[in-house]
Amino acid sequence: MRPWREGSGDRRGYHHGNLKEALIEAARRFIAERGIAGFTLVDAARLVGVTPAALYRHFRGREALLEELAGRGFADLAERLARALTSRGTALERFTRMGEAYLAFAEEEPAYYAAIFETRGLHVSIDSEARPSPFDMLVEALRSTFPEGFGGVTPRFIALEVWALAHGLATLSAAGHLPKGPGLPDKYELLRAGVLALVHGAGGGRP
Picture 1 (spheres, rainbow, N blue to C red):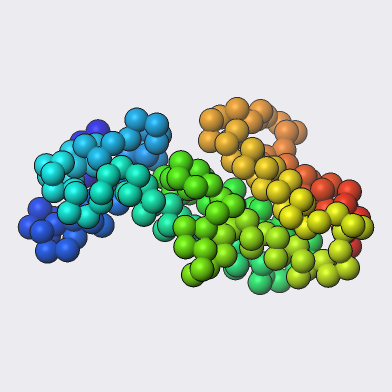
Picture 2: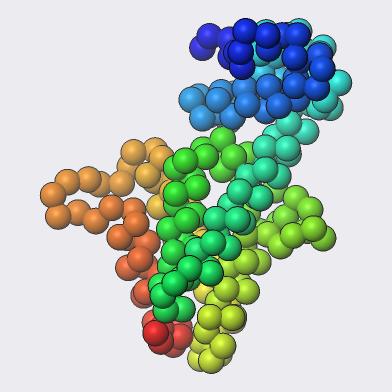
């Protein structure tokens, strides 16, 4: 992988406040292309063309950089889920779009997605006092769009099932393990069918 460059004057810019953003972008690129398992701060330094020692002015270590990526990923995902929830359509359609937004996020932002699960997972917010976690948003979406309830089944249980479905589909798709071919559903069709089954099965599948 060749060193990452922001522009012709990027090296001078790093020492005037741009190095942190350059490191974050380098980490996103490396993780998206090679995965998170072997990622180190040395990799980020090599990509931006600085010494590893320069990185510690912005990040205490690898985990601190991944926490930054995860925090930005949380914010991005939460915004996508909120847009889906406030879109047009029935309650079930809006809730299903939240699952579709989750799949799109995992595909379009693999580095953010990986960082979230490398650090604290979807169910815990990086800054829980500042904003709810995406999982909390799923729970609240179920409660607000289906006020009649789910026949005694807690919304958190259904939200967990929907999360597991979306995460499983995203993971299988990223690994190239979802069967493809004529007549076979794609991950979005599988998600819609799964959400419909889960919500109706819990007794809350009303338009």
